[in-house]
Image (tube, rainbow, N blue to C red; front, side):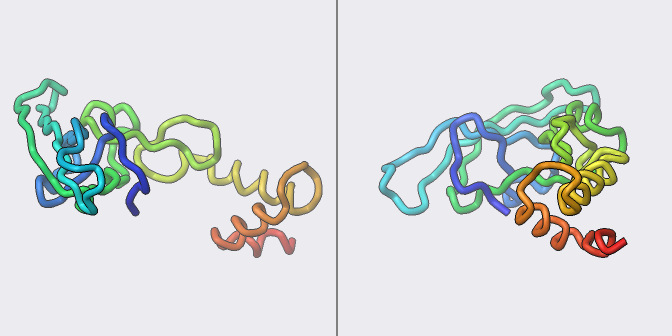
Length: 147
């Protein structure tokens, strides 16, 4: 999955430049004509050591079509370890806004989300019923509605 629109300062992932998810690539500028279909993007490449100190910093270029969102692979150590390794933060899918270790939900927050969706579907809480039913179906939680 890639972002529809990129901006200067966005963190990106380009597997050709480095398959290491801990490498920081940020957009510095878009080079060339803005009418070009696949313009060149200038990137700042930063590599950090295990303490978070920059050990290498240089510039790289890639085509706009090569840019991807940074991977969301879960790691041990939670959001603090993601930040220390300079990985992109991942917000919890329940809506609390807290960061996770890379998974969709913080521990126990999937149950919190499911409970809210089921209450809306049963009419016990206010909400958009069509969106709720769609999410319950997508997540495979419709079986809990029947109980």
